[in-house]
Structure formats: C-alpha cells, structure tokens
Image 1 (tube, one colour):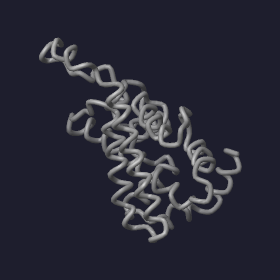
Image 2: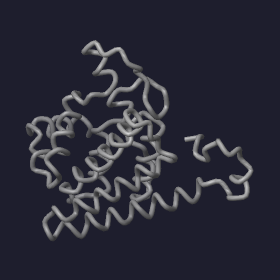
Image 3: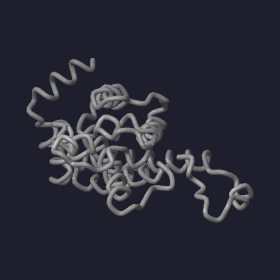
Image 4: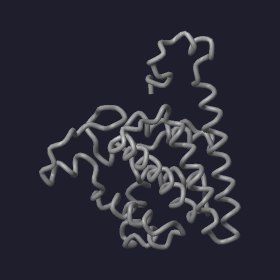
Amino acid sequence: MYRWLERNLAGAHYKWIWGAKIPLKIQIFLWQFFQNSILTRDNMRKIQWQGDPKCSFCNELESAQHLFFGCSVARIVWRTVGVVFGTSYIPKTIWQVFSWLYVFLPGLCEIYTVGLAAVCWSIWLARNRATFEKKWIKTPFEIAFTTSAFIDYWAGMQKPAMAENVKKGAQLLKKSAAQMLRLCEPPRAEASEQAEDEEIWDEW
C-alpha cells in the first residue's frame, strides 16, 4: 500500500498539497518536506554549514526523517495522535502516515493533509524555538496541544461539511494529549522533592 500511495500522491504533482485548505506558507513547508529541502541540520551540512548536526530534542543526528518520525519526541506525538484512533501504531515514514489515515479515516482524504500539516508544522516550530531561542519543550505533549490548536484554527478554512469533522478531530487530540499527560505526570509529592534546578520533564 505504501508504494501505491507514494506513486499516486507523488505522481499527482503534489496537487493534494496545493489544493489543501491550509495557509500558503504551510503548503510550501509541506512541499519542501517532500522535496527534502527543509533546512534540517543534515541539509545545512550539504551547503557547508559547520554547526552542531544533532537534533535539538534527543541529540541524534538531525534529518527530516529523524525529526518528524524517528526522534523520541516525534514518536510520542504520533503515539498521542494514534490514541485518537484507538491504535498504538506509530508511523515511521510519511507514506505510513497516509496509509494509517487511509485506514482510520476512509472517505475523509481532505482531512489527511490538514492533520499531517498540523503535526509536522508543530514539531518544526518547537524545533526552531529550541534551536534559535533556546526554549525547549517541557513535554512532547506541548506539541500535541499545539497541533490540536492548528487543526481547530484551520477548520475554519474548510468546507462547511468538512469543518465539523476537522474541529472534532482537534478536540479529540486535545483530550488525548491531556489524558496522556496526566498518566505520565509524576505525583506532586515526588515532584516537590526534586532539586529546585531540576526540570520535571527532563526524562523526555
């Protein structure tokens, strides 16, 4: 199925991106992602950049594939999305995402791009804040909440018949992130015993 999706989506000259009802800059971002031209650290090294090649989240070598799917932070975000669909499956590639959505959202292909764009854009923003502003997330669920907010906002750009489904998806993701955050959050009594300069979510 992955090969079928790759052949049909890529062969359509990315009409599914340009036809998606999301902001233009997000469409451009997705197109760059599929062209592997996003300025991740591995791509920067190709143009003689001499900076640190490691991921801001996990210190592995950063590439688009790693940042959006392989990184432990990204995997938690996708796991949170999976809870919405009742699955623990975590996609490892962009084509697995489409296959995944094809199974769980049959007939709702217009939603696919909105959800994919929201997840990837939220990860990218968190990465950029960590890279350029030294503002690191305390928990990956922050990215899931941001994703939910983007989906909810972009629901207003959809056709009326589709907008309700998009908003519902945003609400379900927000609920999923809140539930998983509660499950992972350490008890307050234990947290209060930690050193003052220790971040509760350093484990992430």
